[in-house]
Length: 385
Image (cartoon, rainbow, N blue to C red; front, top):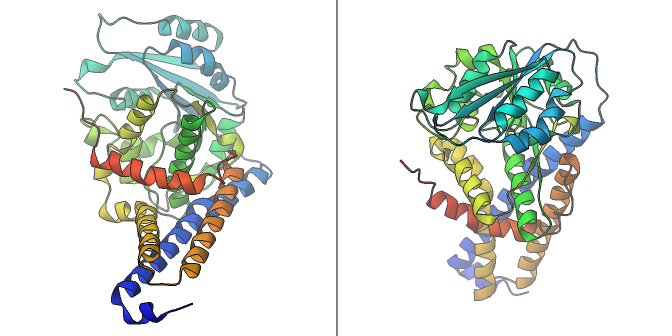
């Protein structure tokens, strides 16, 4: 191996330095986002339940012309194995003249059979607010219990122990926010694989950062907080005018390493069916990234660590191959170590969070989402007036 070009060329030295920085950055991301989180989730699921006085709980769900989802999923929430809980369903509509489906009749039928179901009927345009924040606030205000668990109407708990496993995390008196995981169920094929991979890596990002005492965001499909804490922080009033971010902005502004915990037991997960069309999936991701601009600079840089490391790593490796300024055998060896460590770490994450068959494709999917997510951030969602 000839090291002469590297020793005499400043460009070669810079490229090798970038390769090293990118490699270290990616190893840190794989270790914290994948390996560490996967092990914590595996240990949480294997741990035996402890005796605990279960406090009353209120589950809050927002619906809007979603009778099909109610028929499919609501009974799994109403039948939870929990001693004292209520389910508050907020049924809202845009205007009196709006064409509505059978949501009202499905809810009425469920109310006749489940006394712990409470329905709140409101119009979204009462105060001119857009999005889910106003009806969500009304649902939490209508709840009678202090512990609030949020989910979506298109989500289904994986177990009848969902409430028990989520509430277990509140044993620590300082816990005011609990972040949960939503497992994505997608159709077979390339789009389904991309959807599941993206959901897994996105969830691993915010869950692992919360485990490291630096929570940034959460997912409203499986999110919990204390009602008193919610209103003591001003609820969602400060950002009512922003259509998105009912979960993201509130958690970002109020979650700390001391008041936030993570529920990683497999019975505490919920599932959601992924969109079957690419444009619907892309729009969902645009809504998710619409509020990233409100994050602090440090949070943005922390979240971009993997992307920056990927750019440095592959960019420097490609330049070193093209210029032959550094022995190609060493560059190939570094590439091999990076890919092997990524696959092993991702396999641990899959095992902990109930996914499978992604670890071998993770290096390729990682590159795709580097470009895809960059485009989403450069061209954010534009709201119609």
